[in-house]
Image 1 (cartoon, rainbow, N blue to C red):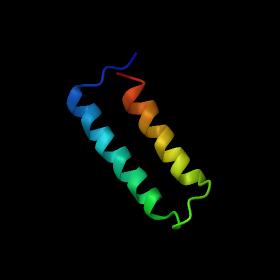
Image 2 (cartoon, rainbow, N blue to C red):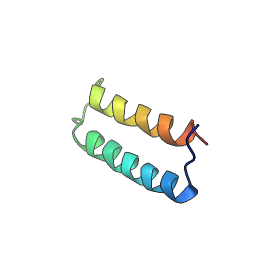
Image 3 (cartoon, one colour):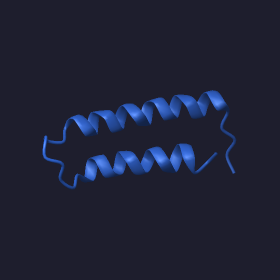
Image 4 (cartoon, rainbow, N blue to C red):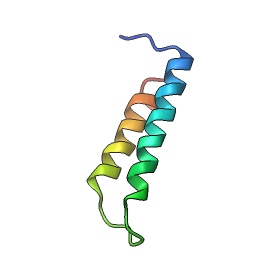
Length: 52
């Protein structure tokens, strides 16, 4: 099991939220399934919320 400090977790959260925001901006006004957005959201939850 890897140890991740609160600061490291916070920085990864900021990075993953920024990735998600970039992916969200690339989606058209009509929301359709988007694999890039799905991957970014899954990474956000996997790395931040699942390791808490």
